[in-house]
Length: 173
Image (tube, helix red, strand yellow):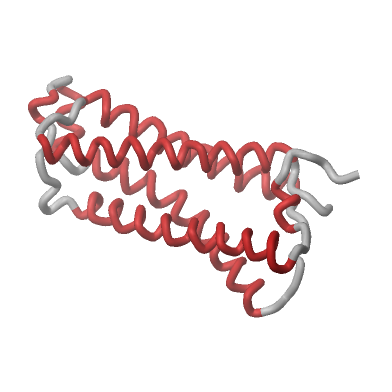
């Protein structure tokens, strides 16, 4: 096997698109919350996209086990770092939505959603540990994605080893 399966590739790129959407929705929601303009729809949209990321990640882990993965290109220290980055990405992609769910459950957001009353939405998340974890995990995810992209760029432009083609829908002959 020299490439990931088509369904792994689709899940990879769809997860990226959903992560961008979740980040944009979360950023807009944070701004609106600080301005006192947060809406129930904003929280629902952000939560649904985050939940979709969690489901896709779990599906990806299942498909990965079923379809297998291409062999690593090497065994250098940097190859081991890359493996660690991938495992960390999977961990954060599971923990981030869970911390978002916990934020809803353990804050006034859950009460506001259950009541259908946006006036109950919190202006601050003071004392909500899950929200603090959620914010830290967003920063960790951004750092991991940046390292992941830099690694891909290095392989494509410096090493020119075709690694990027493994995550492409275009099949090698």
